[in-house]
Amino acid sequence: MDIDKELNDFFSDPLLDVSDKELTLFNLPADMKRVMEGRRIQPDHYAQRKQCEDFLLYKPLFEQVQRELKEGKRTLIRTSKSANLEAGQYYVVDGMLVYLHSVFDRRRARNGMADGRTRCIYENGTESDILLETLRRNVLQNGYGVAELQENIDNAFVNQTLNEGDRSAGYVYILKSLSSDPEIASVQDLYKIGFTTDSVEERTKNAVKEPTYLMAPVQIVETFEIVNMNSHIFETILHQVFSAVQFQVKVYDDEGNLHVPSEWYVVPLEIINLVVQKIVEGSITQYTYNPALQCLEKRIARNNTVFNTEGLKVLTLNIKEGFFNEIMSGEKTSEFRELKQTTLNKYTYLDPVDGKRYLRPYDVIRFYVGYHKNRDSALVEVKGVSCVGGVVEYQLGRVLEHVKQD
Image 1 (cartoon, helix red, strand yellow):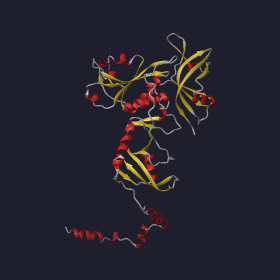
Image 2 (cartoon, helix red, strand yellow):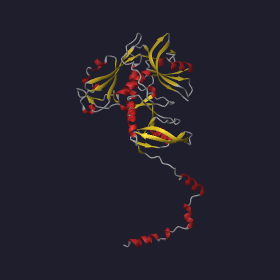
Image 3 (cartoon, one colour):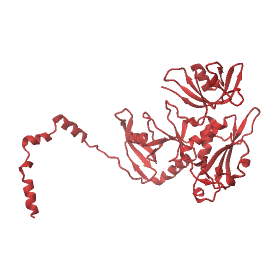
Image 4 (cartoon, rainbow, N blue to C red):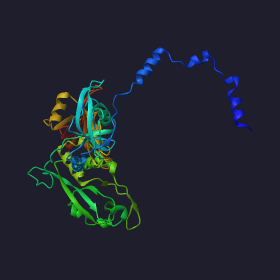
């Protein structure tokens, strides 16, 4: 077979001829050409990564920021669309620390935000002169801001001495496993977070025989006495914050029964201590734990609830704005509700065993301002409940969450 002849015959086929009229079908209109040509205008400069010649000056600073994040001295912050990035600050983009060294040739972007060329230094030893607006967009989509260094808060609440009138609810403890099982012993930063009303030493003395302690000896790392707080809520919050790093392991007891302990977490001890501090301060609702970067991330205020009430008994009440504000400020410490035929089952229950009626035990109250759709709300701890003369009194504790509407 003559391949050259076959190809020549194929391309000489009259069916492949295209007339001048048919060729005009591929012509673009003049207005579309102008648009396309405008789009093809090339920028006069491309931002490129290059080796940072003086990186040795910045390497110790990056290492210090990473250390401060893991120790809880700094936190991550989700940036908002209106946030400006500032020279001298650190940011995280795609999991990498970036130092915004300087901004020059300042101008305004099309969206009105500050723009200009930057000098950005990356923790991998490179640098770039990326546009400030591009960096801001990258941080917004795939990164975080890094909060300014904050001094450690005094751990005065740890092992504190009870004053007259204070009420101890028990102890939250942090344990480290001394197991020889390679599946457990090889895990770094593995801790159990638990609660007991007894001494921690008494609670853990038989650890080698209890699946919850991985059938192995344990080391008591930290003990926090819970004073004037609902211990169940305290422990629940701790477990919620670290739920993403819960350690999953199968353990068999002495009789061969399978157990999956649920209170072990893979998280640095410094972060656990910091979270305990923020629970006591009442500021924990502003933060989440970032497992990838092993540090706390500060939330942007949202117009919806983020507190997980799973496992908690929640009472929902509507309240006037004035009383709501007094609860937020701490001025109002009790909420009263009259027992009526229509609300009897809401505030009380009938015990089928003895036929007597008792007050329902609620852990928290979700307060709503009024009845309109867009309204502020708050989740408040219940410290106690009593009833006198047909009026139920709920003693209020800490505000666990305040949801503000625009």
